[in-house]
Image (cartoon, one colour):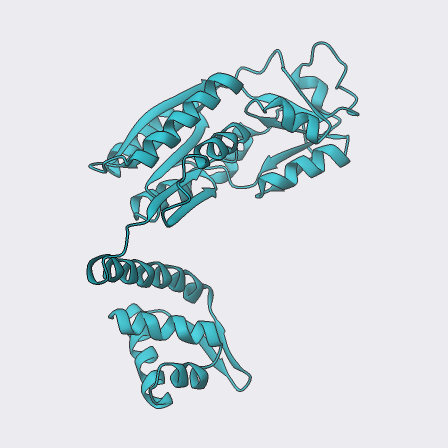
Amino acid sequence: MNILHLKYAVEIAKTKSISHAAENLYMGQPNLSRAIRELEDNLGITIFNRSSKGITITPEGEEFLQYAKRIIAQVDEVEAIYKEGKKEKQQFSVCVPRASYISYAFSEFSKNISTDIPAEIYYKETNGLRTVDNVIKGNYNLGIVRYQTTFDKYFKSMFEEKHLDFEIISDFSYVLLMSKKHKLAEKPKINISDLSEFVEISHADPYVPSLPVVNVRKEELSRFVDKHIYIFERGSQFELLENVPSTFMWVSPVPQDLCDKYNLVQKQCFDNDKVHRDVLIYRHGYKLSELDKKFITAVCDAKREYL
C-alpha cells in the first residue's frame, strides 16, 4: 500500500465510478481496477462492491476511506509547509462526552482561534470507548472520558495499559433535567422512586472497560424506571425533554440559559448517590500545544461556573 493507492480509492469513492476516476487520474481503467484489487488483497478487506449498477462502498471501506482522507490531507499539508513555505495551520482536536458545560467551554475556547491563520479544529462528542480509541490512534490529540467513580480502577488500569496520561477534571453528581411542564417540576424534594412512572432518556452507548454493555447500562439507569429512550445525539435530548413532558434525563449540571432556551428545569434528586468523573486523557509523551492549554483552561473555567 502506498499514497497513490489511497488517492485511487478516495477518487473512486468521490466519483462513484471506476471509469470516471480513471479519467480524473489520467490512467487506464484496467490499471486502476488492478491497483484497487491489490490494495484490497493487501488489507484483507473489500472496499468497494461492484455490480452492473456501479459501485458501492462497504462498511469496512467507509472506515478505511476516513483514514485514507486524513493521511492524504496530512501529506498534502506537509508538502505545502516544506515545499511552498506555507504558513502552518492552527490545529486542535478533542473527543468529549455529551456535556453542555464542555460545549460551552468549547465555544469560549473558539474565541481564541485567530482569523488570520488557517485553522483545522475538530470537536467530537462520543462515548468513552471511541474517545480512548481515537486518542490512542492519534486521530484526536485530547480526550475527555466520563465514568462513575465506582469504575475508577477499570479506567485507570486501561489508561496505564494504553500509555495514556490522565488528569481528573471534576467529580460531580448528576441532576435531573425535565420540562417545566413535567409533573415533578414543582416538587420541592424528588426521590428516585418518584421517577417510576416516567420515561428516562439516556445515551445508548455507555462504556466501562472489561464490563459488558448490559451491565454498564444497568448502572447508568434509574432503578425504578422501566421505560427508556436511547439516543446518541445530544441535541435531540433537549427537543425530547421540551416536547414530551413525561420524560427526564440524568445530566451533568446544565447552564441556565440553555434550560431557559428549551423550557427546562434541572432538579436535584436527594437519594442519588452516584458520583461521576470527567478525566482528561492524551498520549504519553504528547506535548500540549498552546491551543490545547487554552481549551483545558476553558473547560476548568466552565467547570467552576456550572458544576
